[in-house]
Image (cartoon, rainbow over all chains, first blue to last red):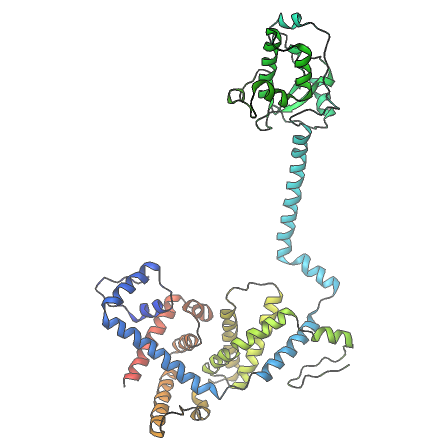
Length: 278
Length: 192
């Protein structure tokens, strides 16, 4: 970039680059400002334009009659291009070789490999997400209860009778849901009907509930279980209704009892049951 | 079947009718190259003449440039600044041809043809003066250093500074300096 002071005149080089749009916007603005005030530079700019115009005119006049008409050379080029296409049309094997050894082919191969890898990863983890849905599969986990009275349930506080689900049973639950190699601390192997509401320690009552399943996660269900236990013991909800509601669709039950379409913020981090760990 | 193009030694000997039909059907790429040929053939040829080539050598190089352009595009290579590309290839081929031919032919060998192109509205005396001025101008350009001359002719063909720099493989500053020098000299000639 050529430096010039405010009072300096513009050099021929800068005038030419200015005319060609080759200067930075800052330099262009400076030159505009200078040309507005400086007749000397404006005249010089016109002279430069005129000089180029004179030269172009002289050159055109000189060569105008010397150039043969274009039709013949154009027809010749067309014929040569056609001949080139016949000669250069590759055979099948040559085309395959060209494709395989072309540098771009490696890029394509890389992109395809990456896409396949991504697809495999998405399928692997995506299937787990789908299989471990928010609501258990009714055919796999219909829910199961043990014979118990309301007084028995209410004589203990929720979670007091909690015992961890044996690892072998937890693995059977994952297998049932066809989840291979479950990630630790990603699921809670949960009772559909919590033992605090008379749920049985039975594989038909267990399902892998993901933590990372948006708003309707295991934390929110734990909050519902505690609330229902309290309501049953307070006599506000009878036990079979509580069991039926939570096993049919626990999200609908949450909406029904908490009168909300979305989980309450206070329940988002509600956590009593431990996550599944290997 | 044998087909020989009337304008040149292009032969399609040994091809069956179907193959020839397919070959003669213009492809989109072929049409594109031919369109570019129509646009740039005259500017290229003028530039080659300024480099000192004879007309028929210049025509051959123009053909080579567009055959190379066809192959360039067919291979899927970059399409950015094809104008600069054809001038760069043409410039290099011209220099090779000139090296083979030995000497540089001066541009004003075409002056006889130019004499018939005087401005019809001028009277004979004015026509003579104009002719002399033009001759003097071009004579002066012939005496410029080669880089200055190339820059000037490329600029006259409408190439921008960056394109000229690419064609001649010099810096942008070099183009600027060269054109500034050439135009200053031409202004002096005009003033005289």
